[in-house]
Length: 276
Image (cartoon, rainbow, N blue to C red; front, side):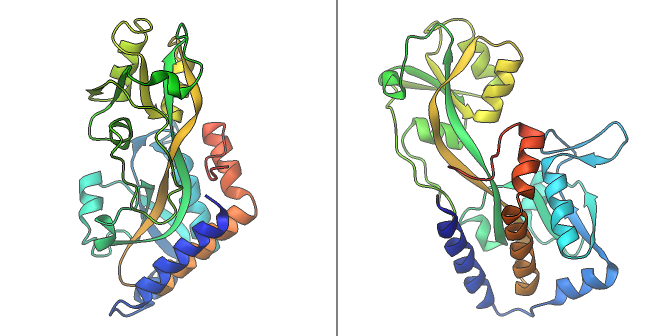
Protein backbone atom coordinates (compact mmCIF):
# COMPACT_ATOMS: atom_id res chain seq x y z
CA UNK A 1 0.00 0.00 0.00
CA UNK A 2 1.17 3.51 -0.76
CA UNK A 3 2.45 5.55 2.18
CA UNK A 4 -0.23 8.16 1.54
CA UNK A 5 -2.94 5.54 1.99
CA UNK A 6 -1.44 4.46 5.30
CA UNK A 7 -1.34 8.08 6.40
CA UNK A 8 -5.01 8.51 5.47
CA UNK A 9 -5.89 5.43 7.50
CA UNK A 10 -3.95 6.70 10.51
CA UNK A 11 -5.58 10.10 10.21
CA UNK A 12 -9.01 8.47 10.18
CA UNK A 13 -8.16 6.57 13.34
CA UNK A 14 -6.99 9.73 15.08
CA UNK A 15 -10.17 11.59 14.09
CA UNK A 16 -12.30 8.75 15.43
CA UNK A 17 -10.38 8.71 18.69
CA UNK A 18 -10.78 12.46 19.15
CA UNK A 19 -14.55 11.95 19.14
CA UNK A 20 -14.38 9.71 22.22
CA UNK A 21 -15.69 11.25 25.46
CA UNK A 22 -12.41 11.08 27.35
CA UNK A 23 -9.96 13.44 28.97
CA UNK A 24 -7.11 13.91 26.52
CA UNK A 25 -3.59 14.21 27.82
CA UNK A 26 -3.98 12.43 31.16
CA UNK A 27 -1.63 9.51 30.40
CA UNK A 28 0.80 11.72 28.49
CA UNK A 29 0.95 14.13 31.43
CA UNK A 30 1.64 11.28 33.85
CA UNK A 31 4.41 9.63 31.86
CA UNK A 32 5.99 12.98 31.01
CA UNK A 33 6.15 13.85 34.69
CA UNK A 34 7.69 10.46 35.47
CA UNK A 35 10.09 10.56 32.52
CA UNK A 36 9.24 6.93 31.79
CA UNK A 37 6.81 5.12 29.51
CA UNK A 38 6.05 1.53 30.50
CA UNK A 39 5.95 -0.77 27.50
CA UNK A 40 4.36 -4.22 27.46
CA UNK A 41 5.92 -6.82 25.18
CA UNK A 42 6.90 -10.51 25.07
CA UNK A 43 10.00 -11.81 26.86
CA UNK A 44 10.42 -14.92 24.70
CA UNK A 45 9.68 -14.12 21.06
CA UNK A 46 12.95 -13.58 19.24
CA UNK A 47 13.77 -11.69 17.15
CA UNK A 48 10.85 -9.41 17.99
CA UNK A 49 11.49 -9.34 21.73
CA UNK A 50 13.52 -11.46 24.13
CA UNK A 51 15.88 -11.37 27.10
CA UNK A 52 19.48 -11.33 25.85
CA UNK A 53 22.64 -12.71 27.47
CA UNK A 54 23.03 -9.51 29.47
CA UNK A 55 19.57 -10.16 30.96
CA UNK A 56 18.19 -7.15 29.11
CA UNK A 57 15.19 -6.87 26.80
CA UNK A 58 16.28 -6.89 23.17
CA UNK A 59 14.85 -7.30 19.70
CA UNK A 60 13.06 -5.45 16.92
CA UNK A 61 9.96 -4.51 18.93
CA UNK A 62 12.15 -3.47 21.85
CA UNK A 63 14.25 -1.19 19.64
CA UNK A 64 11.11 0.32 18.11
CA UNK A 65 9.68 1.00 21.57
CA UNK A 66 12.94 2.65 22.66
CA UNK A 67 12.82 4.82 19.55
CA UNK A 68 9.27 5.94 20.26
CA UNK A 69 10.18 6.71 23.87
CA UNK A 70 13.20 8.75 22.75
CA UNK A 71 11.03 10.84 20.43
CA UNK A 72 8.75 11.54 23.40
CA UNK A 73 11.75 12.50 25.51
CA UNK A 74 11.19 9.50 27.76
CA UNK A 75 12.90 6.31 28.87
CA UNK A 76 11.28 2.98 27.95
CA UNK A 77 10.69 0.57 30.81
CA UNK A 78 9.61 -2.94 29.79
CA UNK A 79 7.12 -5.28 31.41
CA UNK A 80 6.25 -8.76 30.13
CA UNK A 81 2.67 -9.77 30.98
CA UNK A 82 1.00 -12.63 29.13
CA UNK A 83 -0.55 -12.02 25.72
CA UNK A 84 -4.05 -12.78 27.04
CA UNK A 85 -3.59 -10.21 29.82
CA UNK A 86 -2.39 -7.55 27.38
CA UNK A 87 -5.21 -8.10 24.90
CA UNK A 88 -7.87 -8.16 27.64
CA UNK A 89 -7.34 -4.43 28.23
CA UNK A 90 -8.06 -2.69 31.53
CA UNK A 91 -4.33 -2.01 31.97
CA UNK A 92 -4.97 0.41 34.87
CA UNK A 93 -1.60 2.12 34.45
CA UNK A 94 0.44 -1.07 34.83
CA UNK A 95 1.84 -0.24 31.39
CA UNK A 96 1.13 2.58 28.97
CA UNK A 97 1.84 1.20 25.51
CA UNK A 98 2.13 -2.16 23.79
CA UNK A 99 4.81 -2.65 21.15
CA UNK A 100 4.56 -6.35 20.41
CA UNK A 101 3.52 -6.89 16.80
CA UNK A 102 -0.23 -6.70 17.44
CA UNK A 103 -2.52 -6.99 14.42
CA UNK A 104 -5.16 -4.26 14.67
CA UNK A 105 -8.66 -5.63 14.09
CA UNK A 106 -12.13 -4.15 14.42
CA UNK A 107 -12.75 -6.33 17.48
CA UNK A 108 -9.56 -5.17 19.22
CA UNK A 109 -10.36 -1.59 18.28
CA UNK A 110 -13.24 -1.75 20.77
CA UNK A 111 -10.58 -1.74 23.51
CA UNK A 112 -7.48 -0.24 21.90
CA UNK A 113 -6.36 2.57 19.68
CA UNK A 114 -3.69 1.83 17.08
CA UNK A 115 -1.82 5.11 16.52
CA UNK A 116 0.66 3.71 14.01
CA UNK A 117 1.39 0.67 11.89
CA UNK A 118 5.14 0.20 12.11
CA UNK A 119 5.79 -2.90 9.99
CA UNK A 120 4.17 -5.70 8.04
CA UNK A 121 4.46 -9.47 8.22
CA UNK A 122 4.61 -10.79 4.65
CA UNK A 123 2.81 -14.09 4.17
CA UNK A 124 4.36 -16.33 1.53
CA UNK A 125 4.20 -19.83 0.09
CA UNK A 126 6.90 -22.49 0.45
CA UNK A 127 7.32 -25.59 -1.70
CA UNK A 128 9.81 -28.45 -1.62
CA UNK A 129 13.00 -27.80 -3.53
CA UNK A 130 12.05 -30.71 -5.83
CA UNK A 131 8.72 -29.08 -6.70
CA UNK A 132 8.14 -28.39 -10.37
CA UNK A 133 5.80 -25.50 -9.52
CA UNK A 134 6.99 -22.37 -11.30
CA UNK A 135 4.19 -20.04 -10.20
CA UNK A 136 1.60 -19.86 -7.47
CA UNK A 137 -1.09 -20.78 -9.98
CA UNK A 138 0.58 -24.18 -10.30
CA UNK A 139 -0.74 -24.95 -6.80
CA UNK A 140 -4.36 -24.98 -7.92
CA UNK A 141 -5.92 -28.24 -6.72
CA UNK A 142 -2.87 -29.15 -4.62
CA UNK A 143 -2.57 -30.03 -0.91
CA UNK A 144 -1.50 -26.99 1.11
CA UNK A 145 -0.54 -26.85 4.80
CA UNK A 146 -1.13 -23.92 7.15
CA UNK A 147 -1.23 -23.06 10.85
CA UNK A 148 -4.68 -23.61 12.32
CA UNK A 149 -6.84 -20.57 13.09
CA UNK A 150 -4.35 -18.27 11.38
CA UNK A 151 -4.54 -15.67 8.66
CA UNK A 152 -2.52 -18.13 6.56
CA UNK A 153 -5.26 -20.75 6.91
CA UNK A 154 -7.89 -18.15 6.06
CA UNK A 155 -5.95 -17.19 2.94
CA UNK A 156 -5.63 -20.80 1.81
CA UNK A 157 -9.37 -21.26 2.35
CA UNK A 158 -10.00 -18.00 0.48
CA UNK A 159 -11.89 -16.38 3.34
CA UNK A 160 -9.26 -14.01 4.69
CA UNK A 161 -10.51 -10.68 6.07
CA UNK A 162 -8.01 -7.99 7.06
CA UNK A 163 -10.44 -5.43 8.49
CA UNK A 164 -7.79 -2.97 9.59
CA UNK A 165 -6.61 0.42 8.49
CA UNK A 166 -3.34 0.17 6.60
CA UNK A 167 -3.84 -3.38 5.33
CA UNK A 168 -2.67 -3.56 1.71
CA UNK A 169 -5.10 -5.19 -0.73
CA UNK A 170 -4.44 -8.76 -1.83
CA UNK A 171 -5.70 -11.33 -4.32
CA UNK A 172 -6.02 -15.10 -4.14
CA UNK A 173 -3.28 -16.45 -6.37
CA UNK A 174 -4.32 -20.12 -6.22
CA UNK A 175 -7.11 -22.39 -4.98
CA UNK A 176 -5.96 -25.50 -3.09
CA UNK A 177 -7.71 -28.80 -3.53
CA UNK A 178 -7.19 -29.51 0.17
CA UNK A 179 -6.03 -27.41 3.13
CA UNK A 180 -4.33 -29.26 5.98
CA UNK A 181 -4.07 -27.40 9.29
CA UNK A 182 -1.23 -27.80 11.80
CA UNK A 183 -0.54 -26.59 15.32
CA UNK A 184 2.34 -24.47 14.03
CA UNK A 185 4.36 -23.75 10.92
CA UNK A 186 7.26 -25.94 12.01
CA UNK A 187 5.06 -29.05 11.96
CA UNK A 188 3.80 -28.15 8.50
CA UNK A 189 7.36 -27.67 7.29
CA UNK A 190 8.25 -31.08 8.75
CA UNK A 191 5.64 -32.67 6.50
CA UNK A 192 6.74 -30.63 3.49
CA UNK A 193 10.38 -31.63 3.93
CA UNK A 194 9.43 -35.32 3.46
CA UNK A 195 9.24 -34.71 -0.26
CA UNK A 196 7.25 -32.93 -2.94
CA UNK A 197 3.68 -34.20 -2.73
CA UNK A 198 4.47 -36.85 -0.10
CA UNK A 199 2.12 -35.21 2.39
CA UNK A 200 2.02 -31.63 1.19
CA UNK A 201 2.61 -29.70 -1.99
CA UNK A 202 3.09 -26.34 -0.27
CA UNK A 203 2.83 -24.40 2.99
CA UNK A 204 1.44 -20.90 3.55
CA UNK A 205 3.28 -19.17 6.40
CA UNK A 206 5.08 -15.98 7.34
CA UNK A 207 8.06 -15.20 5.16
CA UNK A 208 10.40 -14.90 8.19
CA UNK A 209 9.39 -18.43 9.26
CA UNK A 210 10.03 -19.77 5.77
CA UNK A 211 13.44 -18.13 5.64
CA UNK A 212 14.33 -19.43 9.11
CA UNK A 213 13.38 -22.97 8.03
CA UNK A 214 15.58 -22.63 4.95
CA UNK A 215 18.49 -21.50 7.12
CA UNK A 216 17.89 -24.53 9.36
CA UNK A 217 18.43 -26.81 6.39
CA UNK A 218 14.88 -27.60 5.36
CA UNK A 219 14.74 -28.50 1.62
CA UNK A 220 12.15 -25.84 0.83
CA UNK A 221 12.01 -22.63 -1.18
CA UNK A 222 9.75 -19.62 -1.46
CA UNK A 223 7.45 -19.70 -4.47
CA UNK A 224 6.52 -16.36 -6.01
CA UNK A 225 6.02 -13.10 -4.20
CA UNK A 226 4.33 -12.66 -0.79
CA UNK A 227 0.59 -13.27 -1.05
CA UNK A 228 -0.49 -10.69 1.53
CA UNK A 229 0.93 -8.32 4.12
CA UNK A 230 -0.41 -8.20 7.65
CA UNK A 231 0.00 -4.80 9.36
CA UNK A 232 1.39 -4.73 12.91
CA UNK A 233 0.72 -1.72 15.10
CA UNK A 234 1.49 0.05 18.35
CA UNK A 235 -1.45 -0.31 20.74
CA UNK A 236 -2.67 1.89 23.58
CA UNK A 237 -5.93 1.91 25.48
CA UNK A 238 -8.57 4.44 24.49
CA UNK A 239 -8.39 7.62 26.48
CA UNK A 240 -5.55 9.91 25.49
CA UNK A 241 -5.66 11.34 21.99
CA UNK A 242 -2.62 13.50 22.70
CA UNK A 243 -0.48 10.46 23.52
CA UNK A 244 -1.75 8.68 20.41
CA UNK A 245 -0.84 11.68 18.25
CA UNK A 246 2.65 11.81 19.79
CA UNK A 247 3.19 8.10 19.11
CA UNK A 248 1.99 8.52 15.52
CA UNK A 249 4.40 11.42 15.07
CA UNK A 250 7.28 9.38 16.50
CA UNK A 251 6.68 6.41 14.20
CA UNK A 252 6.25 8.71 11.19
CA UNK A 253 9.59 10.36 12.01
CA UNK A 254 11.29 6.97 12.37
CA UNK A 255 9.92 5.96 8.97
CA UNK A 256 10.96 9.23 7.35
CA UNK A 257 14.55 9.17 8.62
CA UNK A 258 15.02 5.48 7.79
CA UNK A 259 15.33 4.30 11.40
CA UNK A 260 12.51 1.76 11.14
CA UNK A 261 13.86 0.30 7.92
CA UNK A 262 17.33 -0.07 9.40
CA UNK A 263 15.98 -1.75 12.53
CA UNK A 264 14.06 -4.22 10.38
CA UNK A 265 17.18 -5.02 8.37
CA UNK A 266 19.15 -5.39 11.62
CA UNK A 267 16.78 -8.01 13.03
CA UNK A 268 15.30 -9.63 9.91
CA UNK A 269 17.78 -8.88 7.16
CA UNK A 270 14.89 -7.38 5.17
CA UNK A 271 12.96 -4.12 5.34
CA UNK A 272 9.51 -5.22 6.49
CA UNK A 273 8.38 -1.65 7.20
CA UNK A 274 7.09 -1.24 3.66
CA UNK A 275 5.24 -3.42 1.21
CA UNK A 276 6.78 -2.30 -2.06
